[in-house]
Image (cartoon, rainbow over all chains, first blue to last red; front, side, top):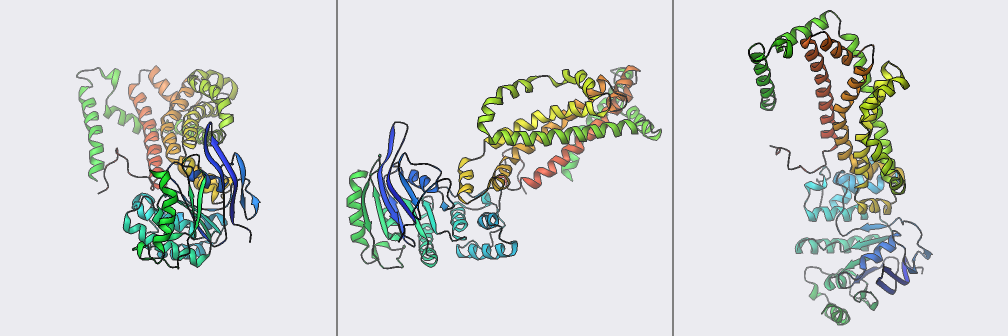
Length: 250
Length: 255
């Protein structure tokens, strides 16, 4: 099977600072991959390369088997919610559909359905500034999920959320992804989140980032984000990743 | 309602003070007085003396403003999106911006004739630079992450313009449009002062040459009406287009 997205020997630096050192891993369709690494190790740089906004210094990024050239049409949930402040929540969530020329009535219907799914029913007419940080974040996720891209990149999507909202969103994301079957690349620095959501966890070292280990997480789904350590097999997976990761943190 | 009354208050006080001072502290031949100005205004409308002047100036203002704003938005947007061209052209634009446009008035008369087009050109030039600079700065200040996000969502260049650049730059565009209103008046009046056959500027010039202070103030009052109406329209446009913007420190709280 051709990988949705593959990094092959990707090496990159900014000026004299090496950032990525021979990174290689791949995302199969329908699989959830988490990349964890110490902060500032170049995780976001990897995502930029996947979008085609940044070209790797050496090595290549493949999308469905073909080298990435130019900006990709890809699902992206940035670190900040980055809702367009001049659009209402409904206009933000429906933006991709509008860009694709989907008719108004159809768009409204799908936006309303999506907003209900992320618990934002009734807020469609609000501007982003009128929403809390957590609501904006959910809006940003809804904006991506609504058009069911076959590949979604998420840059610490739940980082700024309070603990309860985060757990609820982790549960919902898990459900949405298993339903739509897209491939997801999730960048995070939270091992619990990585083990909870991912089929595979890629652990990166400090800068310049190398792949320390790739760990398959074969826990049954759905996994419970509210009491993560009660998921059967969670401890072992967490321990395996932590043992690879700890040398980079301390 | 209270807002309107509060706003009228300083104007009423000023007019009362003017009325009182005229003839007591200052000779009326210098400053006229509000009642005389009102009478003069009535008279010049009743005799149809002012209407041709008004119509000409109105045309010049609207055309000069519209052309200046249109060209300013187009050029500001184009250069804002083309950093390389901007890098090359910036010093030239800065130099042209610094030219006192009023000094161009005689030249424009030679180029465009004594009728409305020389005034349209002068007002348009003044408006253009103001709008151009605010649009240019506004487009360059657009958050790159938002542009990147829209590109990753598959937006075409036209869609980027419509969904990201223009709305993001709209506060700057509207600010430029608002600031340009008085400049269009200055441009038109300066042009009419220089040489014209009709227009409020000519009327004011004649009134002052014939020791008719009431006529001068009446002409100025009509210009003020232009500015106030245009400003109110711009405010309306701002409220409509900038609803999304968070309230600013300088705005009263919504109650």
